[in-house]
Length: 431
Image (tube, rainbow, N blue to C red; front, side, top):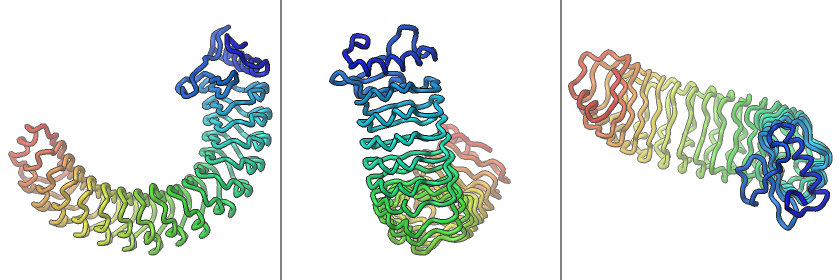
């Protein structure tokens, strides 16, 4: 018996050993048992779940544990273990006895290595080891044939085991924020991958073999040292969610990159060295958000007008002197951010953006605004700071949904009376 629940002697002993550690850490009071939770209750930091007189889940999150008892390996029917945010430096070798384990959550610990016995967990489907101190992964990890999720974000990995290619059921890999300078060719054989995070490493190149990842819907390669992209990246026609390429050293993008990515919804190419964008970017007809700020773009291609589903366009801190007339075709655009450029005028067609709610034009060289700005009936935020405006079109007074109008650091000769009318309607006017 374990506090009125019938368990095997081995399991009862294992729970008592964990219980003792929790009492020593003041997580449990002396004599207090680990609470029994229903199978679908995961909100409890400390709990265990029991089914058919056997323990199937154990949670000891946020407990400041520095070790786990070797007897934990006696909980032979465990399907889920959550030891998130403790102070563990290692896992006992007896973890290899948990042959029914499907999910292991061990984020936010101090693990420097994993026991080789982890390769015996042939039912394991998810392993979460983010924010630890791992310098390597054991070769035995290649034995986890049922693994679908491998997350080792923010560790100290300098290499990835080549045997990773044997994990043919892997769907999600997070290798971000490590110390990787190269990736094993075997990685590109994981044809069932849906998402791949290799951001915040030291990668200088990506292999053309990335084209093998035909099911990939999300790729994060941001914050590396990439100077070029493989043209084969454009063959990943199932990239539907996110493509992060920010914070690299890209000076150009392959013209063929976007031709087959018509299903992509989010593209981030910020913080690079881009001077131009290929016209083919107009092929991203399902794109909803485009971020390209902090580059040296001098112009935007007219093909941007083909992005009929675009809702947000972020192009601040470039060298744009004008905006293409074709932007007027972006009927669903809600946010346009082009601050910190060199814009001297805006196209009259801007007034066609009837869905626009946020227009950020601060820190440009605008001397006048088109009267059509009054057609932006849904506009709630208009930022005109730091331009060369000496007057404002009266049409702004008709923007009944305007919540904030920022006019600071201009040289307005006259502040029109209708500004007070805007304030009377609840708009914040900053002068």
